[in-house]
Length: 254
Image (cartoon, rainbow, N blue to C red; front, side):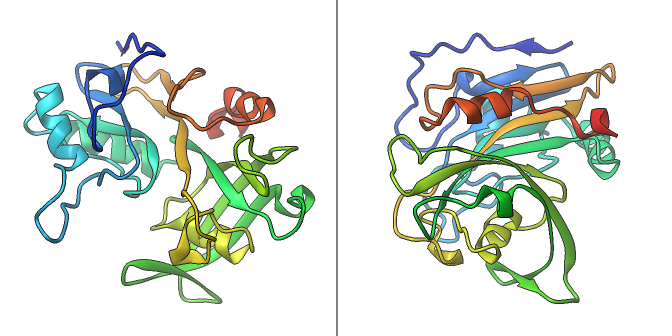
C-alpha cells in the first residue's frame, strides 16, 4: 500500500537543489515518488565533480534504500515527479509497465508566443516528429530518428499571470525521448521560455512534470502523483489546474 506524505503549504524548500522528507509524495515498501526541484540532476553527476549530489544519491540516503534505482529521469532544468525503485527487482517491474505504455505523464510548460496570443487551434492535439540525439541536444529530423509523440491537451486562455506574452500549456507525453518536449515545442514554433538551447527567449525556463499515473508494483492498482496545491508551482490560470486535475491515465482512454 502507498502512503501519501503530509505535505504542508508552508513547507519551505532548502537552500540549493535538494530533496527532503517533505518531497516524498507517495511511498510503498517497494518504491517512492519524489518531487525533484529544478536544477537538480536526476542521475548524472556534474562533469566537474562539483555541485549538489544527484537526486538518486540523495534519495538513497533519504529513503535508506542503498540499492535504489530510477526507472525514468527528467531533465536537470525540469521540476516534478520522479519514481524511485527500491532495488533492481522493483525497477524491472516499473520498466515493464513503462514498455507496456501504462505510465501517463502530464507536464506543465510555459511557452513563448510569437504574437499577442497563442493559436490554440493549431497547437491543441497530437503531434508527431522524428528525433535524433546530437550530443547534448535533440534534433527534429525528416527521417531516421526515433518516432516521437506528444499531445497538447490545454492552452491557457490568457497569458501567464506573472508573465505577459507567455502562456501555460498542459502536455501529455506519449513517448519519452531525450529532450522531447523541448525539441518538439521548438519545432512547432513555441519553444519554452528561457530554453535558449532550443530557440527560447531569455527568461526563467519552466517545465514541470506535474502529474503521473502508474500501476502499483505492489498490488497493481493505479496510483497518481499529483498535488492540487503546490506552493512551488508557478501561478497559472484556473483552467490549467482544472485540465491537470482531470487528466486521466492513457489506458482509461483506450
